[in-house]
Length: 141
Image (cartoon, rainbow, N blue to C red):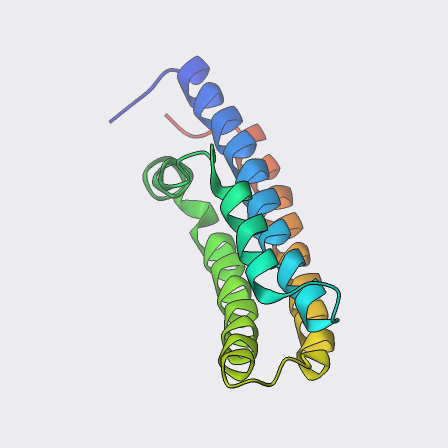
């Protein structure tokens, strides 16, 4: 399958914009739960914030589709982002389980989640750096 340079550039621009939106949604998703861990919010408040954030979100399946179909060179960078996301989710799940058992002091989870979020942000930035290189490079026809 071939596509014109114009449509390839448009796909690249869409990929970049969708990645920005996805990474922003992804990283901000954890912030209310970090506040729960720090004792600033109750868990139900964090859930309410999460529900409010999710309303009107983009369909991020298109982002993954663009990577897999048109920019496969970015698959490794995307997998690194998803692995960092999964690590943050593991910490979040452990905190949620403890919270459900009545242990509302989440301070032991706060620092690990902060480190996981810093790593997640770094992987997102690396994805965008690689995306710019792939999108800007002319592809062989």
